[in-house]
Amino acid sequence: MRVPSLPVTVSRPIRARIDLAALRHNFGVARRLAGKACLWAVIKANAYGHGQFPVAHALRDLADGYALLEIENAIALRERGHRQPILLLEGFFTPADLPALARFDLTPVLHCRAQLDMLAASSERPRRVYVKLNTGMNRLGFLPPELPEILRALAALRIQDVTLMSHFAAADAPSPAEIAASLARLREANAEPRLPVSLANSAALIRHPESRGGAGDWARPGIMLYGGSPFAPADRTAAQLDLRPVMTLESRLIGIQHPDAGERIGYGGLFQVEAPTRIGIVACGYADGYPRHAPTGTPIAVAGHMTRTLGRVSMDMLACDLSGIAAEIGAPVTLWGTGEGGQVDADAIAAAAGTIGYELFCAVAPRVPMRWEG
Ligand SMILES: *Cc1c(COP(=O)(O)O)cnc(C)c1O
Image 1 (cartoon, rainbow, N blue to C red):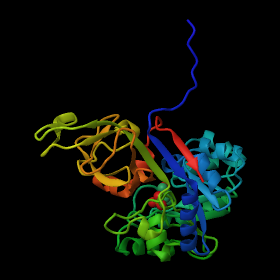
Image 2: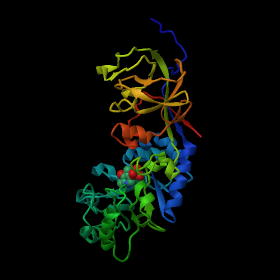
Image 3: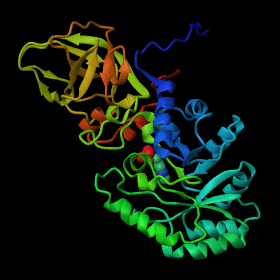
Image 4: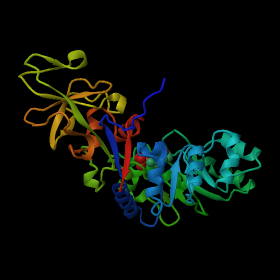
């Protein structure tokens, strides 16, 4: 049987648009905050869901280096011609990883003795390492008093180019107490000769100037590059930080309903209509990455008007309130970002759903076509 061939076009209206000019603007905000310190552009998790390669390409003349997790993704960046330093935030996992680190000039984070043993047993070693200290988060890292011994072991392996790294557990909190305690532990460990340091994520870069470092040090902004606020919306929004949204998730109305008073909307009938009303059905659901836990009342923009979602988000669709909005099937809808439908802060959607912008961006599903602009 011959299958008739038709031009393949994506016709379901949901899209994620990535504004690379906004990404570069946000990088500029990080650059100004960093002062003399260098900047890793954190592009882990497929650049927080924005596409690792387009994001790296857009930042190629701005970022001092790229930070990510997987060695194969780092190699793929090298193969695309990126020559900047590349930091592997979890280092290496098995001895088989080590030849690639040397060959592709990748900088691993060294955070445990098992990694040190692998280095000692290998004939191929990276030129440069980041030694991660646990200054209070208790996730990865050596304890500060272990540092002299780690440095001696590295020197014996002829690895002299060492940067000290730590990660804060609560850099987004308004109180600087946690940062001060971590910095004190780090300063005590980092005796003469002082090693370069890399401490600040987005929140610390914005809120804790004392953690940014100076010439030779490196900050590691992630979420702010993508236009997300590292703080709770009630604390400081992305707009207040001069960050521009990079990702817009947009779709269209594919259905209109006119339920009478007393009728219910969607699975479980969670929302009951009080008066005859007009509701719109949007081609976007949790299988697209929209959070299922977003309750009735979550902001959504339709044809230039702010409105609210109604009832439970289903796999492929969600419902919204069209009271007072003259929108028909095909009308543009912005789930988050800035589009034809209007403007919605992704952090507000995240807050409504009990999560953070990071998770929304990372969760956009592969079935959503992504377009890069700017
Ligand atoms: C993800 C990550 C960052 C970036 O954090 P943001 O909050 O997105 O700025 C920095 N450092 C490490 C070690 C990370 O894992």
